[in-house]
Image (cartoon, rainbow, N blue to C red):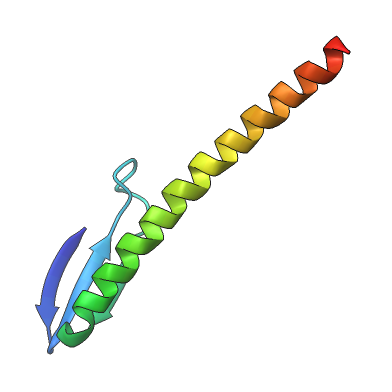
Length: 72
């Protein structure tokens, strides 16, 4: 992610680290919104991580439930 300041706005160019040749996303915000933006991005990232963890736990519990039902 690269940040630049142009015309009173802060711009972020976001590319995938796995394949930087793919198209990128460009976001531009006024500096007063920067802290709100950063806070929102961090919360969104945390939400996505927890959603991934919970889906893996649910899949494991479902697998264990199926194994328990096979025994009886």
